Length: 189
Ligand code: GAR
Image 1 (cartoon, rainbow, N blue to C red):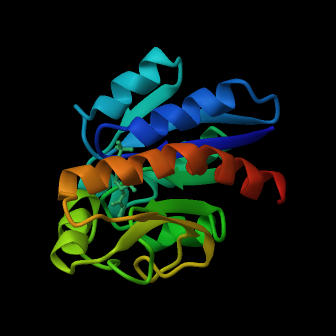
Image 2: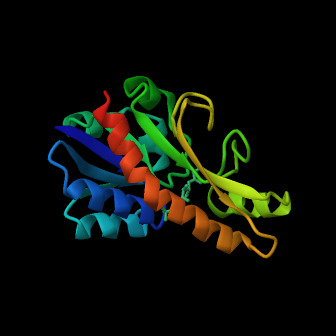
């Protein structure tokens, strides 16, 4: 059995799909959902799915190994970042080297780096007049948005698209691919 912990900061619609996907899998399970926000809707979605939840403060995340202990206690094998907006500290990256998977809502290396998350990405894509955008699923290393790319998928951006309609297209791509890509990556280990 492979155990996943999902980190998410917001609404958690990707996390929800991932939990649904693995609820039917005998070999891989989502054991824990963590958030840096106590009130993040993702935590309610996890509770509804019967998955243990946990929120944490900045100090707990960056200044001690508390979160690592929590993951190790639950025998977590893989970490999935599904809309997680904080930089992952080095101690976690080292402990889970090549076992942390992130989704980025653009075609990296374009529109990556500090400040590029969520709607900021879609606004930047729109302002740049891009004719396509997409998703990147990648491993996390010490450099922001620069770990090994596992998968990318693109979608067309029309002239009349808004940041909101781009976000909707990107979410559809994410839902269609992220759970399956996680499964493929973990099954190949
Ligand atoms: C997703 O689009 C994800 O790609 C993005 O946040 C959104 C979370 O949506 N992640 C980043 O921007 C990370 N840099 P969700 O909470 O509805 O799953």
